[in-house]
Image 1 (tube, rainbow, N blue to C red):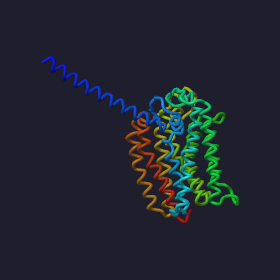
Image 2 (spheres, helix red, strand yellow):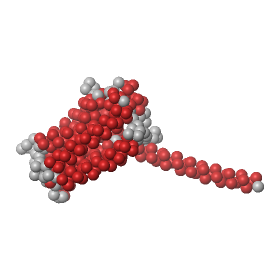
Image 3 (tube, helix red, strand yellow):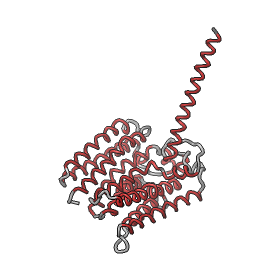
Length: 347
């Protein structure tokens, strides 16, 4: 009887051990994936240099910029599904995402290395997995590749030599904004309002301008509309600051959660995102695009639900979940707005 009990215990222990190893493997795989795309909660394992370089570029931040190019393309009203247009759009997406967002994230990580040592010590730079020389090689490569491709697009669509290189100028403006956002002495991110608006403007306005300049004309109306829409993206940027409150406070950075407290900041997030989209919907009604306006209002509903169930409950614990649940609907709302502009002669 004692032998049977011991054998049963051994079998249970074996199954428990296998389950524990499987759980550890699953956690390791998840942590490795988070590490690769630059998400919070990454693992600290050793990986090849190319994966470290990719992690610095934070691929998880690329989709809004890529979709922003689609918005500008739709708003131009000139998309005809032609193969050459697809080729131009793919290059524009590559500039906005991997090249210039990668440039922004890499230079930001370099100048945030002391803060990341507190908030996210597993990041490539504070963990010592990549050298200073390798970081700057990446910064220069992404900078010149992005600007070079932008200039190539201007040549391809005939902006040069007879007109201004608008795509190149938008890309140059983006790199300038990325630099003053992260680099002293300006370092816009030291102030929650200036830094978060610069971030929101970069995510909403600049990629839209890139697509619109490539396939149409970048008008004052579009500049004003996207600049206003970018105010809503301040709310998205605030969510990214919740996880860094402790480090920001220690390093003297006046993020909005640090300045006003977490409770006030979470309500500001809800207000900024919601009010801007309601105003855009009202404008769409005004120009006669009722169906698009109703579509934008419908996309606002799941955002409000995510705010109630996730953000307002615990913005620190639920920051990633909230972004995953609400950000796609915010982004699709921008696409709906752009499509309405492209279909309406008012623009």
